[in-house]
Image (cartoon, rainbow, N blue to C red; front, top):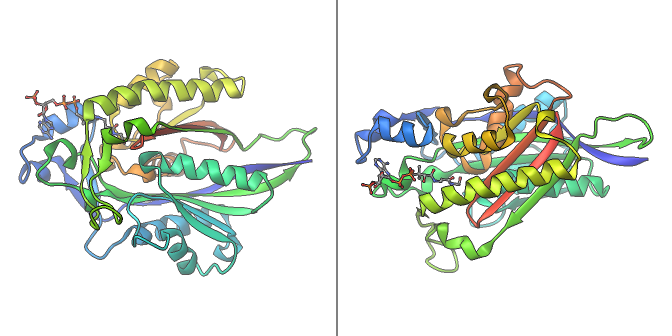
Amino acid sequence: MGIISKLTGCGSYLPKNVVTNADLAKKVDTSEEWIFSRTGIKQRHHAAVGENTSDLALIAAERALLHAGVNGHDVDLIVVGTTTPDRTFPATAVRIQKNLGCDHGAAFDVQAVCSGFIYALSIVDSMLKAGQFKTALVIGADTLSRLLNWEDRTTCVLFGDGAGAVVVQAFEVDTNSFHDGGILSTHIHSDGSMEDLLYCDGGPSTTQTTGYITMSGKEVFRHAVTKLASVVTEALAANNLKDIDIDWLVPHQANKRIIDSTVKKLNMPKDKVVLTVHDHANTSAASIPLALDRAVHDGRIKRGDLLLMEAMGGGLTWGAALARW
Ligand code: UT7
């Protein structure tokens, strides 16, 4: 006998307020054409005043629980990937725990910026397989609009707000009989020597402010292309799989040109890629579960499909996960 962990439901939420490229061009020295041609972004959603990361996360979590047919009281682990917590402390995850009416188990946040969902999934996968918890919520939620410097056109057009969640459950299986494997493997990396390529220039122990996003876009782009290619190769090799085995690539949605390069590397048909960046820009930790939820609920992703998820973000951090839906 052994324990596998499986994705059993997903949900997501985007704030109602839509900001188009044309809206931005009215207040920033940019154009609809520049933003779309360089990134693939057409619009983003911005949280309303008073609408916090935990509010977006809670709706995504409730939808994921409903989809999985799991009651909030049965959740014994909540891990939130976020860079924009409601409060400096405690973790946004404990607020979600309270708001779900969940009074046992553990809840904490993970800070890996745009790789936050993959990091959170990796931690939860290990904890479930170790037999420590049974039913987990993995949430990616961010309100990066709160960290934008409207005087910096090189970053302020790129980000949006949103949340996505998955329910992950542990199942005991007979390892000698057939089972689909659930989450096959996760792979996470970081290289702190590149922390200055993408960071927020504030912090509780330095400026006592939250600060603004600062990015060396071209260099981050270059690293994204090579590091994502390397980590997806690593994930496939670890499972003795080939690129043709993948049913769906569910990538972090930062820039369509970065996604296109991973697709080229994997030699995948474009209709096997879930693309949502046009609709909500870069939502940091939320972008993979937002894309997953879109393709599950519109019927593209079906039970048993093999998913490859990948992301890279500030840190630099990067990672990938292979899972059967
Ligand atoms: O999720 C975390 C990971 N983040 C990323 O993956 C982002 C990675 N980087 C990128 O996606 C791209 O580097 C950007 C979209 C940020 C920039 O695209 P680029 O093709 O690398 O453009 P660039 O930075 O080389 O800028 C080209 C030109 C510059 O003008 P000059 O110097 O050629 O005259 C910029 O000043 O575009 C100008 N520019 C803009 N023009 C209009 C920069 N931002 C804007 C803007 N509107 N918003």
